[in-house]
Length: 219
Image (cartoon, rainbow, N blue to C red; front, side, top):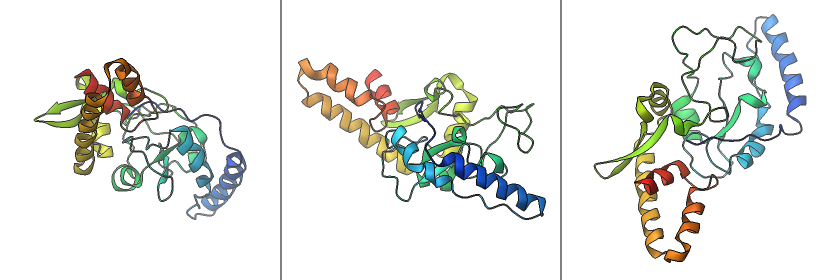
């Protein structure tokens, strides 16, 4: 995980938000579940601002068949469904198969009441990559020849984010190892005069698995 920047709210989201909130309030007032849709207008702008990468695992992929992620899940946080500061781009594996509606809070904090804006008295466990630097909590370590995401300096939030998002799932672990091998081969083929430039490109925020790359190079 790395820090991501959303950029400016896309044209059209404010209109969708206004109509969505109005319809949701009517439905809730009538005792019916609200329709929480229309936020997909933000998908492509989020994908572009995140350099075509999942906000959680840093996989680089097309936006088709992937998701607009709600940092605070749209259920129960229905009023934040269309809030730009709550939206991220994520791969389907991280979002649907792992995070889902999970949003645990630190002991002693309390969940937002309906329609209150964050953070209120909430202290989220899951890292917010658009607000804080995940690399302060999560790093990579080579253990028995395999690259594994670990909590930096024993960070509990780092460990819980890895667990909840499945950042140590087998498919990702395989790809981490493949990526680390590619880095080594790339640098072996690079002329010494160009090595610093190559390293800078590999570590750039636009590159695949850039947090892992930095850990590999540091080792």
